[in-house]
Amino acid sequence: MKKTELIYRAILQSVENKTVLTQLELAKALEISLSTVNNALLPLRKMGAIKVNRRNFHVINVKKILYYWASVRNLEKDIIYKTRAEGIVSEIEKQMPPNVVFAAYTAYKFKFKDVAADYSEVYVYCNDADLKELIKRFPKNNNNPNLFVLKKDFKDKKVSAAQIFVDLWNVKEWYASDFIKALEEKWSIGMT
Image (tube, rainbow, N blue to C red; front, side):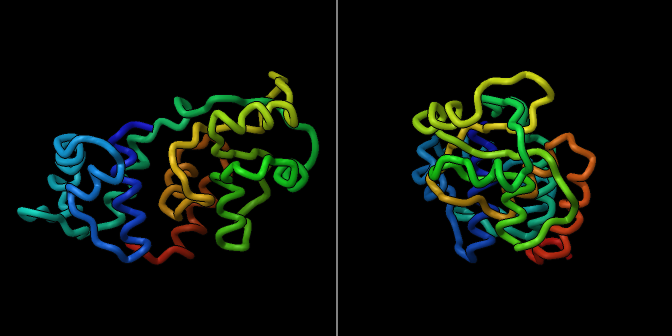
């Protein structure tokens, strides 16, 4: 994930968690330069999604940030492993190593205790240390992949609603739109 995307994720997580961030706090927390933070805020400022003050900024329109991040996200670039996992989705999900973090459809299912449509793909975030265990459980099989492993660049044990939305926006399956619509209905932050 690009540094600017990390910034957008942190901003949206702060809104979801009802916390306020400053540019300096973002730079320190993400271990990136203050100039990178300020450059990432420029398009958000131009579209009226945030108001930048001398020392901090305020989110004015969450939906604009969310859709902007979704439009610049390149999920394909973050895929570090993909394979065909035989079995039903719920069994594939149960076989995951303990440190993986579910994304897209499965993340939605666990966060909202619901599924918007039947799905046959599993997306997960995994770090390099746990990837070997995942590959042991799901060996390489290039026939029509249905398990996609994304590089994990965060410490949390689950993803935010914003991350789920952006991931769903960027997956290619037709039923992702059903999940996006359901997420917009369930997640009230900035969606009205």
